[in-house]
Amino acid sequence: MTVVNSKELIEAKRAVKVPFDLKLRFAGGATESITIVEIFRLLPGKRIVARAKYKGDDVLAKIFLGKTANRHAQKENEGIELIATAGVRSPARLFEAQFIDGDGVVLGFQFLENSVSLEAKWNDADEDAERVDVLTRAMIIIARLHNQGVVQTDIHLDNFIMSEGRIYTIDGGAVVRKTDPPLPTKESLENVSWFFAQLFPKYDEFVSIVLPAYEAIRLWKPDPDRIVRLQEQIARSRDARKKSFIDKTFRDCTRFISDSRFSRFLVCERESYDNELKDLLENIDDYIDKGTILKQGNTATVAQVNLVNRAFVVKRYNIKGFWHGVRRALSRTRASKSWANAFHMEFLGIPSLKPVALMERRLGPLRGTAYLITEFVEGLDALAYLTNRSHFNGEVEALVGILVDLSENRISHGDLKATNFLMALNGPIIIDLDAMRQHKNEEKFQRAFNRDIRRFMRNWENEPDVAARFQKVLPKTYGN
Image 1 (tube, rainbow, N blue to C red):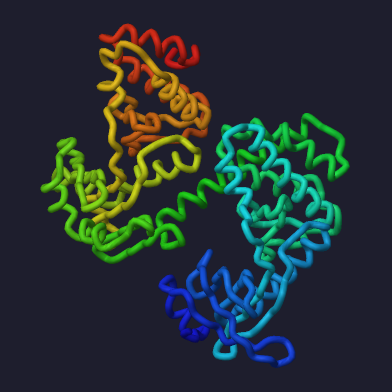
Image 2 (tube, rainbow, N blue to C red; image 1 turned 120 degrees about the vertical axis):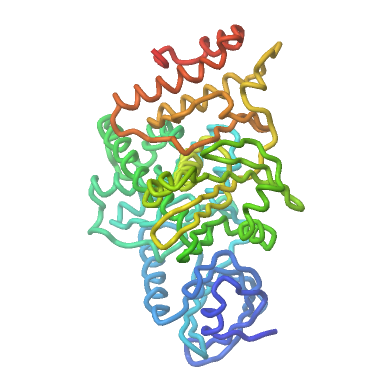
């Protein structure tokens, strides 16, 4: 088995290959090896979370690398102690060891067989009762931490795992003591709000259902005003979380690769970036010319591009001429707006086209032609799909569901034609997002959204049955 030192792990960045051995010095001076067999999470040059073999048994290994390794390992240890102080389960720490060669610390923890995160249980839930159970279990743990003045600063469902019916709290590095026990109400509600802010807004209705479990542990009397304050704080926390989420889509991180040069800016989903897609990006205009043109206009060209095992839609935002190019050079590109808006839709749980890559031609700070690549989705647009249809099977209600989601989040589309909805196999999705906007002002939103609805309803002037169906299920306040 290959023995790897800390310097090699740092230099490998994301290209760390398993299995490999680490030679470590344990307490008392003994030197032993552990074998890393599976990587769960990798922060290049800084941290690796992996399954390892130690003395024949599975352990969870947290590997801290570089000059800050000891500091981060100490934070992890302190967080684990705080979790235990609060009477909350956490996987048992089995050992701490130093790299023999180079800067690095490994913490070994109990490996929980057949464990599943509450995030996975949430995603697999089919009924609201299951979702309420997941949230209630988390609320009880969070309340116990707060009773001791302890908070998990990176609080989300993935940091709670279930094994044999028991819930364990993980990621001690994000657990800190904020105050002397107990945590004050203001700080408590703020931390709880960050937990709920990870969920889609449609699940905010669960807050009043599961908060009593938290209140019971905290020995708080029920207070309707407290729920109102929490809902307001959730909205603020979700806005902050959304900004952070969208900002990450433009930089190199676990999910995305980013390449910024003098002549080009590129960001791409990491799991999609292979040699085939790389060739498409390097020769994108040739691929558009050889592809199936879906739309040819002065401002945009849209083509379906078929690769060996997958298909993409490539949208080129054209520069119409010299002065158009001058006006656009210092502005944010429409491709960039579409990219951000698509991930905004993902953040809110509103079905839209899945973006794969964004590329902009540049000359230093000056922007030129821009491209957006999305997954190809098979299906007719809503206008073609619903025209002359003899019966309906929930399609109208599904479309209205998207409109309601947009309205509840104060989002206007800007060009809400029926052709900007695709009727995919799993339901309708919304496309063409470069004019989409989220409004802070309610009055301005209502004007913009009502224009959207009126534009949408004009599609059905020659389809009275479809129009009647929409008028029946659309909220009465829309389009007045």
